[in-house]
Image (cartoon, rainbow, N blue to C red; front, side, top):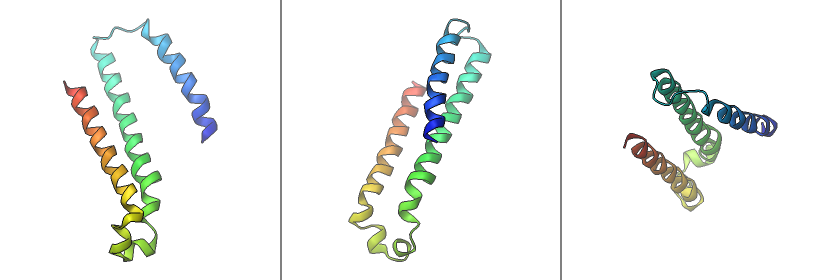
Length: 98
């Protein structure tokens, strides 16, 4: 996975730099393409946050059966990070609208 990110990030930056001189920013096709890529990126972020990062913390059977552990100080950092993440997504959404 690290190798995939290492290769695709510079490649994506190079493609993006190459395309900035070619396309018209106000054309409908460009706006649709940007909207699709933004939605894919948002979906990947949500998936990574909820499934890959947050779920293992809460899927332990010991934690699921005990409310003291589920809402206790051991998972407090996870809950805080989760709600921080949601608030940052909301801020990004607001800045995208206005």
